Amino acid sequence: MLELINVSKDYQSPADTGSVSVLKDITLKIEKGRSVAIVGPSGCGKSTLLNIIGALDRPTVGRVLFDGIDLAKAGDIELAGIRNSEIGFVFQLHHLLPQCTVLENVIVPTLAGKNRFLRKEVEERAVSLLERVGLKDWMLHRPGQLSGGQRQRVAVVRALINQPKLLLADEPTGSLDEHAAQNIAELLVELNQSEKVTLILATHSIKLAEHMGQVLELSNGMLIDGATSK
Image 1 (cartoon, rainbow, N blue to C red):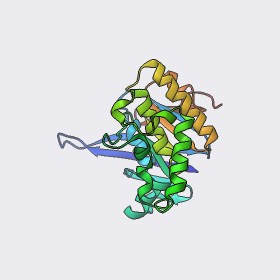
Image 2 (image 1 turned 30 degrees about the vertical axis):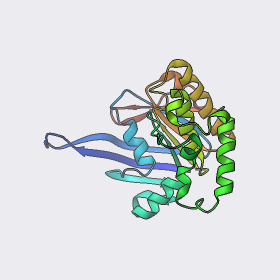
Image 3 (image 1 turned 90 degrees about the horizontal axis):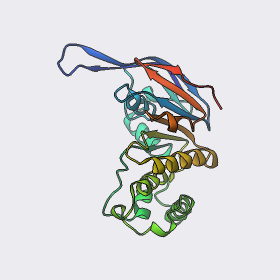
Image 4 (image 1 turned 60 degrees about the vertical axis):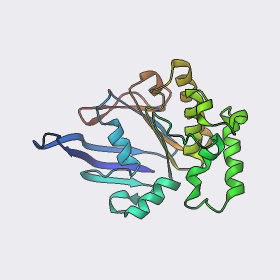
């Protein structure tokens, strides 16, 4: 369902002394329903790689095929539609809207696109997902009334509300304590299996990565198979 072919990404250096190569000739194929961790230290290019996979950025060279679609050839409107309906994003910071309730935050991604007229069905799915992650009694609370771990669980549910084929998580436990991080790791694995969603996460935490079916290490801009697949 996802294939990267000879993907490289260069940026212009801040001092305008030439380009800096962040990703180098990455080729990768991920089957539907798999869970994959991309590990490496901060600044190694993990976020850049996820942004390219998630159609938030384009590679300097190379191709990204998502469910048979060549993202390099897709226009901005088509890419926006793919990001909204086919890909879910979870970031280190939850980016919840403070003025909205938990339930309203989860529903926000459905206000545009294919689900915008299915209000009743969307709310039922949102409530069901929130119950599954232990937030049944918090649906009408605002983010400021929740713990860090609870807010990140809301962010995970929001990423899944449109039933995406691919879930991308960028350092999803980076701002959490060990207990909350473990809960989020277990939640991602459970949802990967129950929702049949392909999961790719970027992390510097080996403990988090070990929950995934495959671990890849990003080193010097290149991917290295870091562990045997489960």
